[in-house]
Length: 83
Image (cartoon, rainbow, N blue to C red):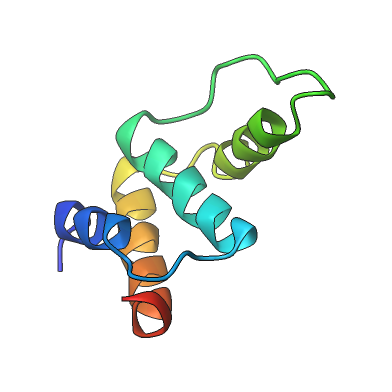
């Protein structure tokens, strides 16, 4: 399975992953498609934005290919539960 297929299939899960699982996907997806997080950290009152920023930022330095491979592995881990 390739990254594009995994990301499309993850979008069509029939059940919604938990917030932590969503953030795992989000952080790896952003790292794979954009690269290192160079945006400024959201303020303390923006809880959702801060959680997403942290999820992406924890993968800083991970190469695009490594992030794609990790995303695919994450998809394969959760697909039986949500697909």
